[in-house]
Image (cartoon, rainbow over the protein chains, first blue to last red):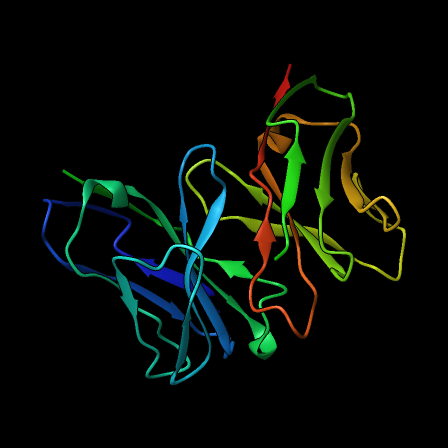
Length: 113
Length: 113
């Protein structure tokens, strides 16, 4: 199993550009989530999904969209990038549709100029 | 909602010494407490967890203790080694009902030679 994979590893955007961060897992996990990690602020939940076709907002959803058309994939879309979205983004998945035991991907470091 | 506080934010110990990281939580109904280790440039990885029906759990050099009355739990690392240097996150959740895992803000542990 590859576990949780994320692409790209690094990305630089200009203010106003849009892009999609990709996340995939091959463990047949129902629960998937996106976090951002900023210095001194730990991990903050952006959006999550308890199964295909179901998504919901986390703590900091503004400026981000998600969709879950398959169990495996959970892309995160930045609609119009802002410097405040400069961060490291982690995708995670968990079995059974519950967020208890999460497996994290390697992260995407995003810089918005 | 749940609130998790983690202390200290940084911790430096000499190789071979013990390290202790403490977390407190606010929701008395929380019943699952995982600990994650994040090495530089990587995603967090689950290293140990504890459920509310036990007071202590050990796995080789690491152990976690839980005090439900005081609503705090701790990570203990004995005989520290340089490879233990990382950021450690605690988390808490009420399984089966909560939709998200609440993380502490992290502790940067440095093990010096």
